[in-house]
Image (cartoon, rainbow, N blue to C red):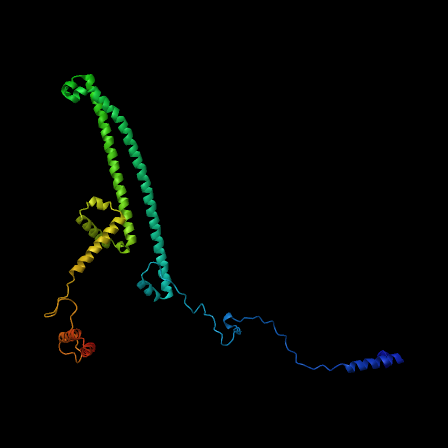
Length: 347
């Protein structure tokens, strides 16, 4: 039967269930039919950094933005020790050229400092060696003198007759014993003479080395005080001028060579002062024109005021006469005339 196939057994409960199910189905909204679309694939952002959207500025419209470090060129100071003219030229260069010059200047200064340190170290080592050699020389000279004095005294006692001329060398050579002894003394004296000569040569060499080191140090101080002397030609000209100046003052050449830096500095100041005085004396003095009074200031004629007359001396004489007359007479009229004359003179 059809009712049985659909699960309907004809009972009231079954009918109520079917009615409730039908009402539930009718209460559901009808689905809207939409075209099927493929689900979008996951998108990976591939925006280049340069294509990113700029950030919105939160500053006020009238706010002044800070300077961009990429557009504002930093100020590069010129190397220390440059003149004002060189610094002004340095400021006109591009930053890349300025940095290149600074790198080269720093390298030059570092090399100069390194050479200066090496020079100072070499001088210190040479000075230490020279002092040690001088002490050793003095020690050997002292030992040699201690050995020589008793030997000379013994020889004088043993061969006093030969020293006084009572015994000549020919007769002394005929005495084998004394002759051999005499020759032994002479051999020792020869050896001591050679040692003394060697010590003297070493002392002279040490003095030359000391003097060379002194001159080198002094010249370095001169170049540091006057950088233009780095040019060998200018230094030679400076040396010749100073030497000629000091030689003209009667100072020996050896003493000039041993002069210290401060001595040459004072001498150079004196030399420049002398040259300045010569240049000042060589300037011709201005000659006065014909008919003009001697002196640099020309005497201008005195300007006469109207009503004063041609001669101020005559007016003075007239006032003096009125004064004398008023003093003698004591008259009121003469006194008034005196006052009028003086007032007219002042006008």
